[in-house]
Length: 235
Image (cartoon, rainbow, N blue to C red; front, side):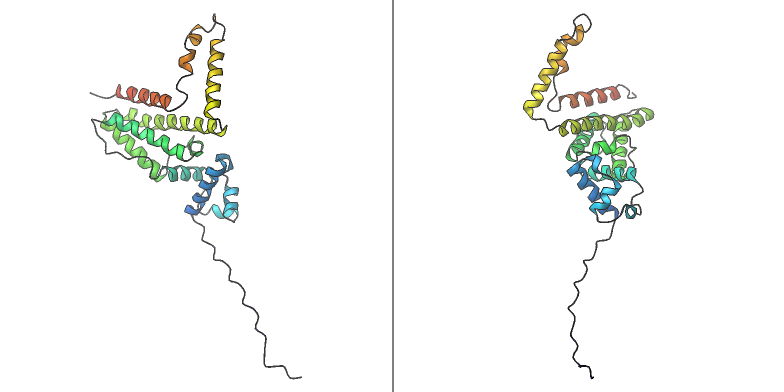
């Protein structure tokens, strides 16, 4: 039997979507999205890989491990937020305070970054630039080398601790009314302690529970740190 010269044309198969190549930036993008939506504990190499529709092994060609991913998250958050100052010997104390305020602003803008930063030596490019700038400001204030070196460790520790505490409290989703009630209850607790054993705590109960809202306590901390450093300046 002769075959018909006409052959049916099969329908064209839809083209597969071109997958965007995996890169370090895409990995950090996905990790940052997880961090903001679900918190730091949700950020793992496995979950980041799932978000990118790939396997965890694929990530290790671009990011060595979770510790490096944490560094990259901190560096990404710092970009464009932490201020860089031209060191001014006349204004070095205020410049240092402004740097600390911008660090806290960065960590507030990216809840969870404080947890990623805890226990890390900042080695990302943007973090190193911030450290370099703080060192230059401290040297403009005539601080000894060792004091300047230790100060750039102390300062991020303080700011990170404040931001981490705020993120933990924020996770409780307290309203202003809840916070006021909690502070009142805490004050009453201090005032109700045995007077013979805790006389000073009772006397300062109101002061101990003040400044819980706003930045009063943070500003007190940076004032203490900067004043302490200024006392070490070489004449």
